[in-house]
Length: 396
Ligand SMILES: Cc1ncc(COP(=O)(O)O)c(C=O)c1O
Image 1 (spheres, rainbow, N blue to C red):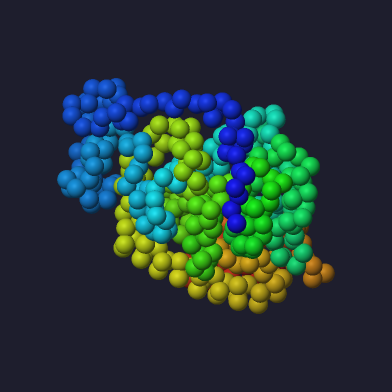
Image 2: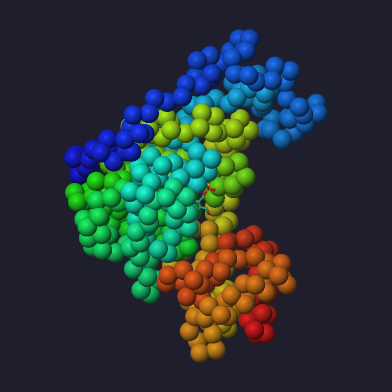
């Protein structure tokens, strides 16, 4: 059905719409004797031989672009090769729908800066959810409106009618942040609900679907293929999770070409570094994707093992949420058999400070009473975690 009456100009901040983007030196020329960008013509201050050791083998092989072999040069501002690799991996036909950011966190901040005028516009979030939406909003002096997920029995789905009533009543809401699968819920949002919001004529802002954990979900779970149909949809993804590349900081926002162009106009010119670009391309090549898929298979098997073993521990309640990501949400029970924040927090602190195993206390999140969020570890790490939990639950 799509959204025919959506006006991008009406939702983008007027100063951003009017922005004449900075034209950086590498937008013009990138070969020849480059005396245009105040780089260091004498080269990088690494001891000889160190650079190749931290970069993949192909760096300097002659097949790479100029910037790959010259870290003293600013990186490619457009990163066309990384975008082509992502398009191939996600099965998207073109690369003009991408913005690349320093992790998803840069995309989330940029979305707020592009669409929300400080002290005027608002964002809507559905707690319990990823904490950075609120933090970015606060940094940008943007108010956060909360419409909680339906947390009954750990369902963690949207309350569609409430969201619609809220946006009806408040046209200053410019961005809705959805997280699918959610953090800390681990739950994929219903596609029909997302579609219903995208098509809701009473809302003229944009909808962000944060898919940081999407590769841990069954095939067909991503909505990134919908961007051709919905001009009000932005999907954020990252190499931090399934690809195991949190250290390189690479996130991607997928949207209409018009929104992507605005993001690319607004970003810092050289936000993606050359080492990040090289490593991302290696990860997104055929062998890198195969390795990622192997890791995901192992993580899913270990997630099943953790779920099975955690609930056998006296003092752990039934795991809540959808278990669609690389973590599980385990309620810790008090003496009366109900989830206990007090006991969960003590367990979390003791595990971290005396046992050297760090999980995340999530008991203060809505619908997560007494919960610890446990990232799926290796087989050995999970066994150690379970042993220590079993012992501490008897003692505490
Ligand atoms: C839901 C969600 N979105 C985004 C991020 C941040 O991802 P990145 O490392 O790409 O900034 C996280 C990290 O934990 C997350 O849980």
